[in-house]
Length: 76
Image 1 (cartoon, helix red, strand yellow):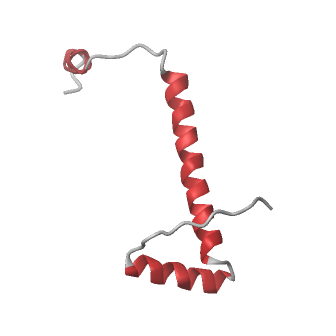
Image 2 (image 1 turned 45 degrees about the horizontal axis):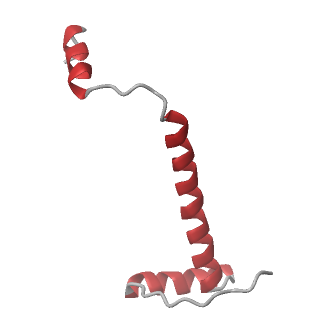
Image 3 (image 1 turned 120 degrees about the vertical axis):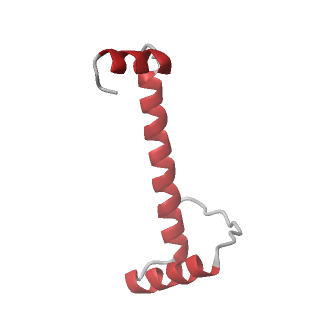
């Protein structure tokens, strides 16, 4: 197990209470729950960045052109 770092985090009282209850009900530490949530958030960010990078070469569409095309096709 890697060496852990200590951090001070301030939570809203209702979130802290919910986190403590979840930790007790799942027999998981608050630290483990927080670490899992941070990992999930960072994983989602990495996936979003990969999608942005993959789509970076797509041609950009001007909003005005999209509106004109929708009007021309009778969609708006």
